[in-house]
Length: 350
Image (cartoon, rainbow, N blue to C red):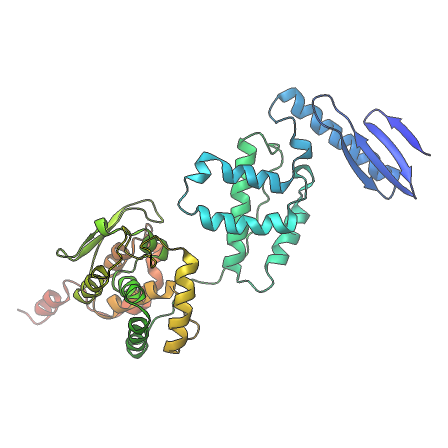
């Protein structure tokens, strides 16, 4: 047959394959090619039913049937609410992978199998936590599309797509490693030396460090104010004297920007800017299997080993949930707590 028309679409045979075309008033025509007529009819019937439901409900935009994931991602990133997110740069990088690999896939053709295929592709050379970040970014985009009339309400993001992550990593610096690292950081530049000192001395995250402004730092009072945090709760952090000295040295540089960690022109730096210099310093210090975030773990480790309680550590690091701080519990187990001296006195009959 050359062409056959049915209630749900037009079917055309060419070189042994069947192309089904669905035309519903209010939507642009949609076409797909199949190996047999039955599969083509089933798709056309389901697609036509879905389009009529959307048209009658008035919930979707007219161009949704032809919209691709790349277009969805573009509109999501251009949305004012997305633009206001502090992690926009990281979000854009994660979604760029989806655009490059699945950007031409239509929203209406996005399936659980396709997303599982994407997850398996992401697993090559990436840790489960990293894979989950890519999946989370696309899930945020997808759910935004559902609330914006670009993704049908029925197309819910699948459950149990995320990978199981291993227990939280806790890599700490030894005293010798810390000394070597600080020496290499100082040899590299005052900026990176101060960045490492602040990270170990206060436990701030890299994002918090990059956003830190001089107006947030009280050198005389030995504290800094973290205004924008991962948990959206501002906190004040004590600065040890050695960290204050490193910051004072940084502040004496000829070019001084508004942010603490700035480039040669005094401008804010990117994550990649820090990571590149961190890689050079880490190599010079002979540190293996050690990430920037492990500086934060090292802060917690040094505090725990010198008498800080889990509650105190959680307050310094800005943990919203005590369960997050529990990863450091083995460091304080068996240590005396407030009241042990008084208890000893009672046991002695004092």
